[in-house]
Image 1 (cartoon, rainbow, N blue to C red):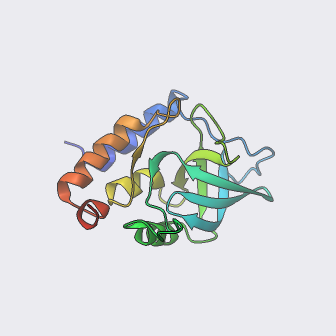
Image 2 (cartoon, rainbow, N blue to C red):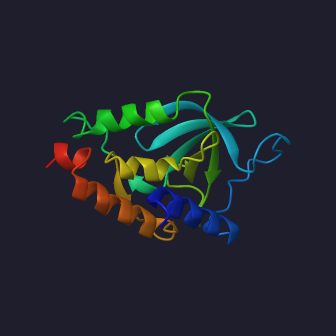
Image 3 (cartoon, rainbow, N blue to C red):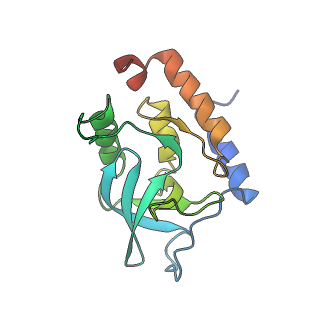
Length: 170
């Protein structure tokens, strides 16, 4: 019986082959890059990063998830916000090559790209990794819900294991 990660990887491959998640078209991608490839330049917080796409800087909001805020005036950071941000800093240090895959809507009200972010080096789906480790909860906003069932299962598992924010925050 295949492991959970193998099943998830197979599901992502099937969705990609079916065209469910189209790569963000960065325009004029160099031949050595995969479609939708970008380079992380900065982590803003637990669910937002900045990337370079062929010399163009873009802010990217990881879709399907929500992490606690790191700065929430006047009350300060939310429970587990700094930890979630630190985890993303570890996962996506500047210079990390990623592939951005969109869902239906490509931008939010703040003009950020909306994307599923996958590291090139090991095909880690960062959005999912945050939920699995308890640094994020699901945030399914129609019509960008292609991975909602996958993320919901990961959140239920993280809650059951009491990891991350599920043990630290009430």
